[in-house]
Every structure is written in structure tokens, then in C-alpha cells.
Image 1 (cartoon, rainbow, N blue to C red):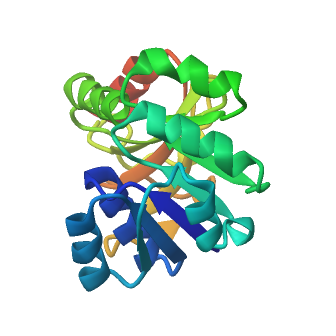
Image 2: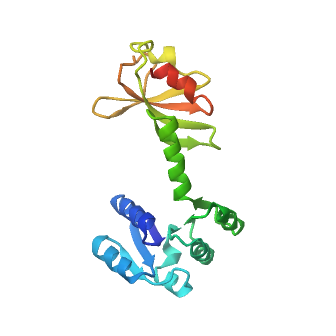
Image 3: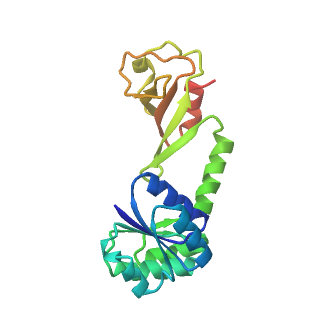
Length: 217
């Protein structure tokens, strides 16, 4: 997969590092020469110093071969303009960072539907740390109708019981358990639950408190 990232701030650099570790082929764009020099020295990626809102520069990146174009600068206007320009090259996946949530509608009006606000995402995660301190939130499904959560069995009332006695219900279903070494196991109806065992649970929206009381203290 070939990915082009515009913006070498904290978000862009962190994303680049993760994608490089995943084996993606990257080209990075930024108009800050110092940031470009640092990235070129540290990352296994092609780094182009210039303005990502310039069609000629985009063509130098072989934009027509890209699977993803991701605009991660802190400037919403620059991100919007670059995404509009990239659309004419038929890049299948265009993703934009937006700093001001009020600007999200402008991106969607021109057909850029994959709009991410790291600030809002971080705030949402922090909110979950406060409201769900013992739970790792993995992913939301559909229109937020359900979540997959990691939880730990600490309720003595269900320790030693078979999974089929506990799950599924109308509120949740245990979809995975984990061995002590962290290896994921697809649970079988007759498997028993142990104290301290980590499980992944598909939880219906609005049922978290009920499920937490069922599985945890």
C-alpha cells in the first residue's frame, strides 16, 4: 500500500512511524525545511519539502498511484484545499485532520467524508477513562449502537461458571477470552470463567453499567 501524508507535526509523524512499522510505502510532505530534514534522517520514507496544496508537487509524489492521501497539518484550510486537489487524481482513500470541529461540514460538502479530529477523539478517550476506569474501549460499531470492550472477570458470582450460562444475553456477548500469555481464544459454550481472566465483550449501547456489574465487582 502506498500512502502520502501531508504534514509533519506530531500527528503526521506519529502516524508515519506506525505505518512504516506496518510495512507501508510512504511519501511525506511538509513546507517546513527543518521538519523535512529531521524526518528524512529518521524515517524510512521519501520526504518532499514543499506545499501540498500545489498540484505540480502532488504529481511529483506519483499521487495517481496512491492508495491513501492523509492531510494532517494543523491548518484546516490547507488540509481542505489539498484534499480537493487530490480528488481529481482518483485516490481511493482521502483522509483529513480537522482542528476546528465547525469546519467538518465544509469537508463533507466537497465530498471528503473521512474527517478526523484528534482533539475530539482524545477528549472522548479521556471521558471513557473517567467513566469506565477498568475498561479498555476497543471499537464502536455501526452508528455507535455497540462497543467491543476488554473487561476483566472479578465478580465471584460468575467465576467458575460456563460461558453459556452467562452469554449471550440481549445486552452483551463474550466474543473472546485470553490465555495468561495473552493469546486470544474463541470461547466455547462449556468454557469456564476464571477470576482475573480478560475477556472481549460486545456490549449494546446503554448497557455498559449492567454488563460491568455482571462481570466485574
